Length: 543
Image (cartoon, rainbow, N blue to C red):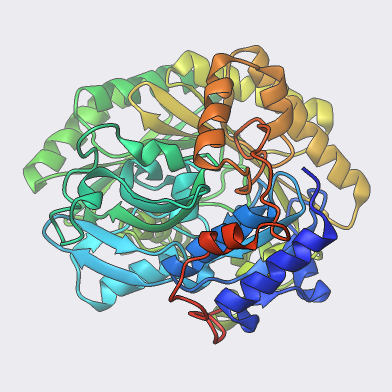
């Protein structure tokens, strides 16, 4: 459906009425900065930037969009680096920036959860827990402190402790049809913890509706927190021929409950996201943890050394209660501390600082805090692109996947690193980042060509994307028509009948319900707007 100039003007006028003029930005220069992205995906047209400050503001935004047919694209922080940053699958859209909705509503120390708004960042929640003396921690990613929790989880991002979607206990969302939905028991009681302790609730478990979808805008999340405990860290080094055997041994150890932490494996070639010391030869490195009593950790250590030593080049263990980091070299202490920080729920901007330094821009701690938004906007910093897939968690499949990626990189003449992590006892993720000079069109084209080719090569061996970038969604859906996508489109038509939420995002484009004619039927338009909440965001929200 074509968005007419008249409909667009009407939408912007009504958004300014219900949000306040400062929360509706149409300045071309400010919109241009939001179109820039570190991966150099082609820019999409943005006709407005909307900055809600409350649930009612989001309801008003959607009501106007429904009435005018003006498409929306919500973002938490907009730092979906490598997959499109803040950009939609297709434009034009109004970008709904939820950064101003950044309240930590509550933390339950007994049941281990927090209730947060979509603008809350992982560094913010981590700082909050530390400042309040909490014995809980967040499952953080290796990305920057300013990575969103809600947006990352809903796109199936992974943290140090495993998939973040496993930590989603409840959601509040405004559907594209205007309804406000709370999942689980939350819709029965807003009195903590009575609506928060049992995520599935009664009837269908609706949490999955909002994961990699475009049915509505999430306005609150109940996120699981984890206990801070002493831990045993196990790291291994293995050669390429040893890779299948030691992965199967790690999986079996997890199945046998010898280890209970997440498993991460990397080829160690990423110079910007580094958690191990560099070595002169090509070796794979694995890292995992065991939590439990001191006796449990000691027994697990003995059993893991017994199992892994014959299969790998080296096994090392570090117990946070028993061992001293100062017994290691300064470089080893540095990387160990970085790994332990992530294990203890403390995110950092160290990878962003390294990226800046690689372009000749070392930054201070103060400057480091300013780097995050500039990663998209500063084209002198290296570009970042990645492919992310899911595969069976067996040594054979991981080795085959790693070899396929390496072969595609050689053919494309690019340098790419390969990392794998356990998603579940049966599944692993594969994450393959590469860097390039954003100012060099040849390097940009080569990087994007590699990304497309490696995903097609993996698809040929039945390894499919876990997360998809904004250029890849439509071609993938076109290649794989099925009842699954038809059902997704049917849900979209019901929950977002005007098709105004993130058109094309993980969904075929349905034929939307005709837009209401607001000129000939103004009373109908008025019924879509929510009374008594006009101007709830008259002041500038937090940047």
